[in-house]
Length: 381
Image (cartoon, rainbow, N blue to C red; front, side, top):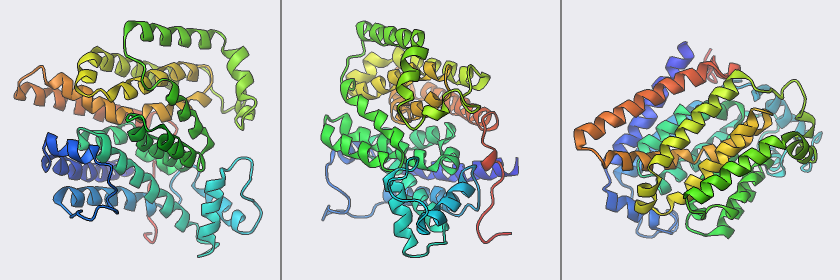
C-alpha cells in the first residue's frame, strides 16, 4: 500500500503539471501547435514558454521514478542479466527472441560500461516517456486528461514490467499523428522503429487498411462480422498463424490463460468504453475529422480483445490499439461537455476523473503486477 500511495503522489504531480500547461493555451493556439510540421529542434523561432516548462517537469517526474528504480518489475532481473550476456558476446544482434534494435542499444551502452545495466533502464525510461509526451503534445485536446488516462490504464506501471513493449506502444501511439494525416510512409517508418524494440509492434501496420473507414452502421456491422468469424474459427485460423511466429510456443503453455476472470472483465470494460465513444462519434468526427482514425483503432482493439479471452497472447497485442484511447476519449469528453453548461460540464469531468481513479485502483491490485508492488530506488536503502 505504501508503494501505491507513493505512485499516486508521483502521478498527481505529473498530471497536475500538464493541467497547468492546459491552462496556458487557447484552443486556437493548440491547433497551431498540433498542425505545425516544424520540429522543435529545427524551429529557429522557438522560444521556451510556460507550457514547455510544465511538460518538461511532468516528463522529469515520471522519468526520474522509472529510471531510478532498483530491480522493480518482474522482468528487471532477467533483462539486467541479458544486458551483461549481450556485452559478453553470449547473445548476438540476430537473437531469436530479442529485437535487433534492443540488442544494438545494449551493445552501444556496453561501450560505456558493459556491466552497468542501469544505463539501459535509464535510456529505455527516457525514450518511453519522451514519445508519450510527444504524442500527447501533438495530438491531445486535453493534455492533462490524456496523461491521466495513460496512468489510469496502468501503462506507466506496465512500463516497469514490460518495458520493451511499452516503449514500442508509446512510439506507435505517436506514429498515429502521421497516420491520421495520411502520411503513411512516415507512420510505417515509426512502426518499423518500434518493432526494433518489440516485434509485435508490426501489428499496427494493419491500420493502413482501415484508418479512413467511415464510422457508420455498414462498417460497424463489418467489424462485428469479422469479430464473429475470427472467434468462431479461432482454433483453426489463429492458432495456425501464431505458430509461425515467436509466440508459437506460448500457445497452450501454462502462461496462455483461457477465459480467466480478469480478461473477461477487461473485455467488458473495453466494450463499454467503445460504446460510450460511439454514442458521440458523429459529432466528434464532424468537429475533428482526424478522430476517425482513432475510432477505427478502438474497433480493431475490441475485435482483438474478444480473442484475448481464448488466448492471453492477444491481450498484449490489443495494447497497441488501446493506447490511442488517450487521444480519443478527451475528444469525446469535449463533445459530451458541449451539450451542457459550464457547471454541468465540470461535474461530468469530475465524475469521469473519479471513475478512472476507481478503475486505476482496481486494475492495479487485480492484475499480475507483483514486480511493481514494492518500489525501491537506487542508492536508497
